[in-house]
Image 1 (cartoon, rainbow, N blue to C red):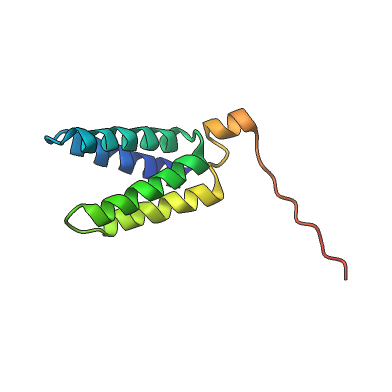
Image 2 (spheres, one colour):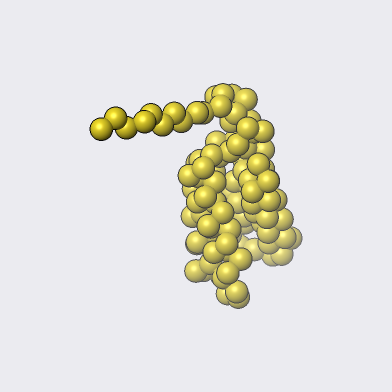
Length: 109
């Protein structure tokens, strides 16, 4: 849950900060999309999809924006990790779809 909340807050703050500057219409739409992805991660709604979109957005920003790309690479890594691990117990996904449990059976040789 903590990883999901921190990643969502990072996406939200970065996108809102960039919207405060004068951006072309295309870039502004991408930042609005980043806000939607950040909100989805923050509350845990469609976390695997939002994590994948967060990873794609962060990789795109790392290669297209000037400056230090390491923050975006870190956000991309966190987004991919969230897409693979899921939202956790305290999320909208857990309330809507229930807890997912993986049972690993013993191999009998």
